Image 1 (cartoon, rainbow, N blue to C red):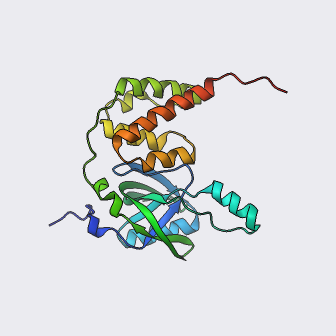
Image 2: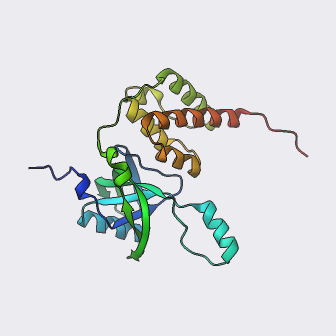
Length: 227
């Protein structure tokens, strides 16, 4: 008998509730803690808990939204990036003040085929998982320059004034290390999206290294003369 906590490709929903959150991505096999407090997302989480526990994390495209709003002059829901990641609610806890603290386990990325009518205040989409079937396999092995990564990460964290205990993450596997850093480092939404959409773990690691190096350089570069 299959364990109820396992999710197969055939279990994936064709009607996916989504949590559009700028600057936040979920990676396949990653774990993302979320503090849910808005009524519509409390509704979404409670509905998901009753029906498969799967929700989609996806970033809204705020740059496109600003352009659309400037053209139309009318407020609307922000458009979505084309790729997100479905995750299963692996743990949840209700707080005394009515919030839900949940942990999402990343399952598989998806393309947005179309947006469906909302339900109880939250948005829903029809996803396509086909291009990302391999996400549900054990993460591929790849060559990682861990020494170079940790050096660039240390410089990045120092220039960004981010307190992370590097000793804690040194024991992570190469794939888990890369995915975790992609999720927790405060890159901008477009950079986060590039990491999410990378075709392979090697490509994702290379992109991560480049972003860490650029972030450290930009923060440490002296300001130009003031006019």
